[in-house]
Each structure stands twice: as C-alpha cells, then as structure tokens.
Length: 144
Image 1 (spheres, rainbow, N blue to C red):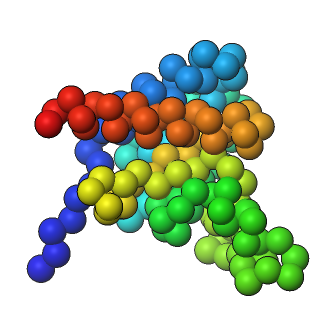
Image 2 (image 1 turned 90 degrees about the vertical axis):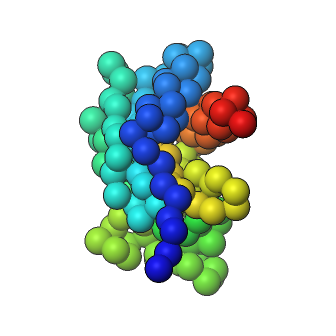
Image 3 (image 1 turned 120 degrees about the vertical axis):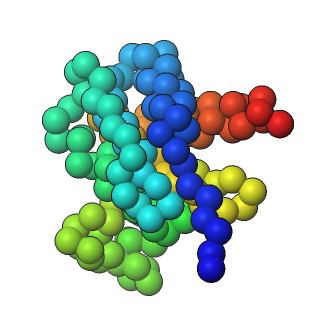
C-alpha cells in the first residue's frame, strides 16, 4: 500500500490566493489552476479580465508540471527542434504545455500537486506561479 500526500482544497485556496495577490501586484489578471498529484483539477479561478483562451492553458500547465515534476519552462527548452522532447506538446491530446507558468508543488521532496497560471507573458505567468508556491510554503512553515 502507498501513502500519498496530496493537496487539499484549503491548500489549493492558499495557492490561488498567493497567485491572485501577485497578479494584482503586477496588474495582470490571470487564470489560475491547481491540480492534485495525479494532475486532476482541484480548484480554478479566472480573475476578472483573465483571458478566456487561458482557461485551458492554466489547467494544462498545472497538469504538465505535475506530470513531469518540473516547471513547464524546462519542458519548453527540451521541446526545441533537434532536442529529445521535440514535438511533445502534441502528445496526450495536446495537453502537454511547453510554456512557462506551470510549477509542481513539492512537500518533503514529494510532488503533491501543481499550479498553472496563464494570461500574461510567460515570464509574468512564471512569477505569479512562483508567488503561489511561496505563499503555500510560508503557510506550511507556520503550521510547524
């Protein structure tokens, strides 16, 4: 039997709140998705003004980051022509996203879920996703 750690709805809310705060700070309304350790959606928020084309991108960024256990920006580098993962973005029904903005969420060295953010530039999406993970980590430290 396996004992699996996973994000719960409260953790997802903390991630979304951290992402929302950073998005408001930089003035870019975002679509924010949180998935569990299997890549299944736990929570989603589309901020007022978040792009409708970013809804599925945010969800798929979170799915991708959880699945590869790395940021989606790392997959983007490996997806370039001539690289080992070139063309991977068309796999899994096109759900593999190779643009920055998706990050795994790790607790005690174990991936417990992911966050995906979309509506800004790739750099803005990544900054907002990182702020979300930082916000959750700060809450985790407060519990100890």
